Amino acid sequence: MKFIELLFENLLWKSRWLIIVAVLSSLLLSVFVFYIATADIFSLIISHFMGPSNLPPDIKAQLKNELIVRIIKVIDIYLLGIFMFVFALGLYELFISKIDPAAKSEVGDTVLLIKNFNDLKTKLGNVILLILIVSFAQHAVEIVYPDSLSLLYLGAGIMLVSGAMFLGFYQHKNH
Image (cartoon, rainbow, N blue to C red; front, side):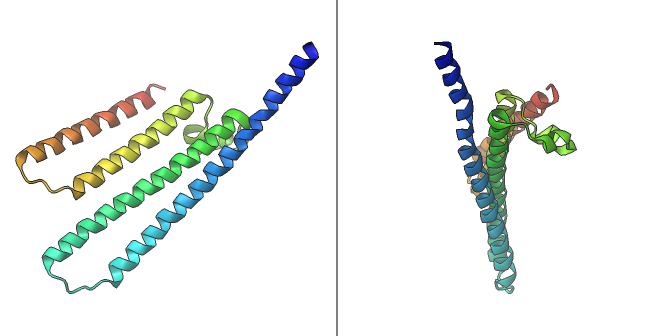
C-alpha cells in the first residue's frame, strides 16, 4: 500500500509540469499583445503624420482628443501584456522552478520575484488596478460633460481612483 501511495504522490508531483502549458500560452499571448500594441503605435504615428495638415481648429481639436484616447488604449493593451507576462512568470516560479537570474537581478527582486500565491495575487492585482485607472482615464477623456453634475461625478471618480492608488501604494509600502 505504501508503494502505491508513493507512486501516486510522485505522479502528482510530476503532473505539476502540466502548468508549463499555461506558462508558455501566457507568455505567447503576452508577446502577441505587445505586438498588437506596438502595431497600434506605428499606425497612430503614420496616421498622424500622413493626415491633412490644413484642417479647421475644431476638427484639429477633435482629432487631438481621438489621438489621446487611442494612446490611452495602447497603454491599456501594454498593461494587459504585462499582466500576462507576470502571470506566466508567477506560475513558473510557483509550480516549476525558481528563476535564478530573476533572484540575482535588482529588477527581478522587486518586480518579478514571486514567492507564493499572495505575491502573485498582489502583483496581478496592481496591474489590474493600473488597467482600470487607464480605462477610467480613457472614458473620462471620451465622455462629454453636459452639466455640472456630470463634472461632479468625474471629480468623485477621480477621488475614488486616487484612493485606490493610495491604498495600493500603502499596501506595497507595508510589505
